[in-house]
Each structure stands twice: as C-alpha cells, then as structure tokens.
Length: 287
Image 1 (tube, helix red, strand yellow):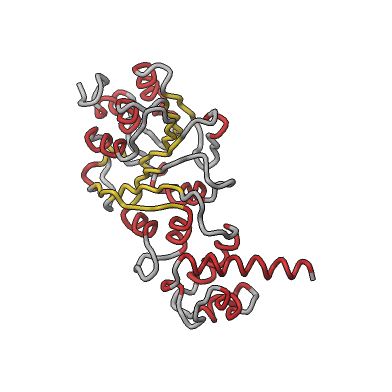
Image 2 (cartoon, one colour):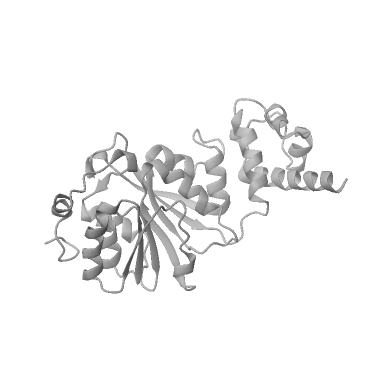
C-alpha cells in the first residue's frame, strides 16, 4: 500500500502495463510518492480547483493531487500505453479524473473548465516544457484562465525562467516569464529520483500570473527581446538595428542609454521599448 492511497506502488503499475519511459516522448517518471505529494502541496489549496496535468505517465502526481483534495484533475497524456493505468486512478476517485488522450501543445482546456478556478501542475516532458510554458504565458486575453502554475523543468531552464536583469541566465524567457508572472524556484529534485535518471537536476517552479502586467503588446515585446538578446554581447544601438528602426529612439523612450547591453535592462525597459515599437509601426501604417 502506498502512503497516499490504496492503489498499487508505481513500480508495479509500470511493470504491469509495460510503461518503460521513452526518450522520444521526453519521459522520466517520478516514482517517489513523497516527492509527488510535495509538488502537489506546492499548488495548494486544491479544494474547489480543477488541475490541468500534462504528461501524467503512470500517475504518481495525479494520485497526489487527488489525494490532497483537488476537485478535478484533467490529465493530458499523449502516450496511449499510460491510459489503462490512469483509468485505474479514475476508478479509485470516481468523477474526479478526466483523461484526455492528446497532445498538450494543441490542447485548449478552457471548454472543459465551466468557468471554475484552474491551475496547471505538471512534471513536464523535457522536450516540450519551454514551448508549453511560453504558450501559456502568451495566453490571450490576460489575466489567463489559470491562477497558478507549478511546473518541473531542468534546473538550467528553471534558472532562465526566474532570472532578472544582471543575472547570468537572464534572457528572453526571463523577460516573458517575469513580465506576466511572479516566479520562484521552490526546490530541486535529484536525478536519482526518476526512472530513468536524467543527466541533470530538476527544479520545481511556481508561477503566479500578474493581474496587471506592465502594458505592451506581447508580439512587440517578443520582437524587442529577440533582437536584443540575439546579439546579447552587443550594445542596444547595434543589436536593435535588425528591427529596421532607429535604436536610439527606442532606447530613449525607455530612458535607457543605447550603449547598454540586453542583460542589464530591466523588464520595465523592455516593455517601454515594446510600446514605442508598436507606436512607430502604427505611424508607418498611417503614413
């Protein structure tokens, strides 16, 4: 008997359904139910909440979320081999686990939510983790349909998510993440906790959406940061030339010296330049 419910141990589940992890799917299963419970607790309170889980695999985190009282879990799983194991969990928690066999990168959960509070909690497959995150952060309209994300990434990616100006890991992902959310690395998980063990340490990150991010168009912000960090060792007066506008005008709008480099610019500077970029493009259209 496991520590959180009366379902079989995860190793037995994996053996019964031949759920060997597949590298092509970015699978690394977390079998320690104490750790999956710790991840689920990081998303509390779970009562009256619908949780979207991506890549549940044999269902360790799924079980923890349900055991801790999540009203409903919508588990999105691409690997058909895992579906029977998840069905066992659904039978143990009647009416509380909805299994979606599909690709999380194209799945929109909003029609299933009925306006209820929702959050995203997942041990994300490494090979799609960053695209999924940027997609959620790009949700329109904003504020989004979720009120929290508790997600696992490779430690290197987690450091990029929480990075701010003058941090070594600061870049486009840090600007987007911290523009739209409050971010924090909660704890690390060693490779030995997974089957098979990855070559890197993993980190659990919490992101809480900002209700009123600094105003700017997301597309303009992405263009500014792509140009600035695409040549991050160069000064803004050089790196922003690729936008086809005078970099000095963009920098001046943000009150920034154009001789500075991207890694020293706070998020407020990037959003100010994004607003100016939008303004200048609109003027071109009018002219």
